[in-house]
Length: 312
Image (cartoon, rainbow, N blue to C red):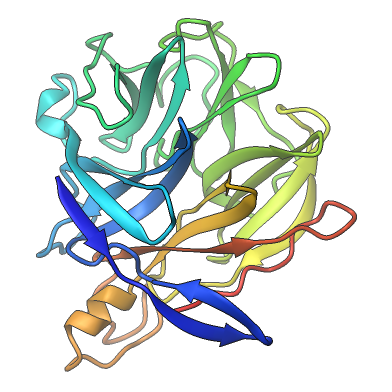
């Protein structure tokens, strides 16, 4: 377990705000799924190796805070080698509490979505199925790219949903046991420019599906139903210097936040490198060592979301 603390002040439009981005600096992290359990905020990211030359992650850590300033690294919650049916790629996960247990959803092999269970939010998590929960070749799934990025959501009536996929949002209704589903795959409509990283949250009775667009921006749409159809609303966060992005949205202690990633830590650690913007630029030194951040998120009176302004 490692204790991390960093903070400094910045001024934004006359208000004093706390800023500590990236907020994890002793390792490279990406794809943060933020969840609140028992008055503590936990973040479940992926873990980029220090020498990464592709998205070759092998384990998942868990971080927690009670004040949004001081963070604890609880160590490895699950390692890809402990998932017997998986070969590689410990990519973007998510976690939820149900049945007095914690269910950790994760992608592997660009093809499968698995689930692991623990009695604690920090793990260790154990695979109860010994096989994937759902895969790219499962009946009803539509995905001709990577089948990744599970995002879990439990509605007010207790029904749980899992969203996943690239280019098309695939969704399933989980059974009460949280490790199986009813057999039907729903393909969501109205998700303009969807690429990956689907995230569902609810605010004042409306369902918000946010995601990374093919444009690289984080966008969102809204619906009166968790399975849609959705209406596209706009951009929440502009492109980051990491080329990729992956986010989550959560309320904690009365304030809404967006978590996301960029490459600021990498450039801080390598000041000799010219910072070039994102994936695919000639001479860009990498898109593979990322760092997780968060900033406050605000709604307009009509329920739409204001653009999030990244701080450093």
